[in-house]
Image (cartoon, rainbow, N blue to C red):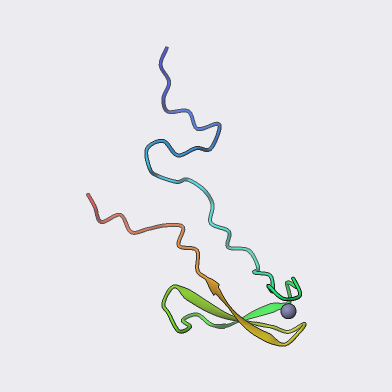
Length: 74
Ligand SMILES: [Zn+2]
């Protein structure tokens, strides 16, 4: 019996990713500390976020993970 609707492997077959976006605390790329704070939701670009590491006191940018896209196609 054909069951193409199974997603045990987590591989998107129909183009819709049902993955949960990694919305956890970002880590500092320099000291790998999780003691970072969101400085600005909109950095130089709209797809980036500025974070400030309180451990090494360094600001860094991080790409925002847009997990859910607005479905305006249909
Ligand atoms: Zn750091």
